[in-house]
Length: 224
Image (cartoon, rainbow, N blue to C red):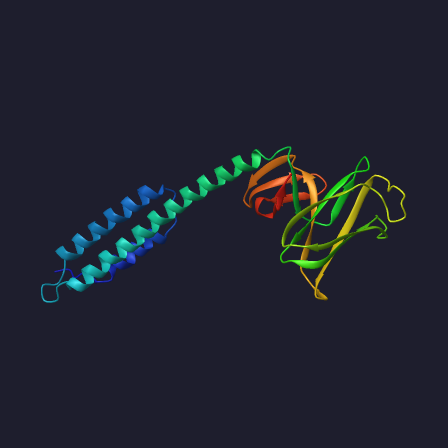
């Protein structure tokens, strides 16, 4: 009489579940269950009468099947939720095309004597200063904002330099310095740009903002 090893079902089950598969998740789960039951029945039919299959072993093997099946179902559910989430993000991002946004950055574009920038404060400060520099790195304008509360603060620049003259249109950079009781407070400069298009890829949904670059939805601090 043939004796079937008690670890056959476990080994074959793991090989079935972990091996490469080109079938859908539902078919994979069903195939695994059918294979498991076939192996279990075969094992019970061919067991050694003097050394029958232990109930604990059967229970353990059934538990393995239940666990693997549950994981597959959970993965399928998570994939469906991720797909739905990505679709929702894409729709939200598409609605932002043509809108201005403030995102972390140091660039500021002066056009027609007007420019928009911003500051993001993680905590309140009693002194906040914004220094705008030209392409050569020379400071052309210092804006004293005084004390500010935590949060996002959009700013406008009329193109006037500290000398009183009007700065030529073009690309500039700026930096933010904030302090409270003489100690530095973290403040992030915000660049302004208009959303031109939306891209969906492996990295998720991103916005293409001319003059700023590729921006993630989570990087947007304010929509103007």
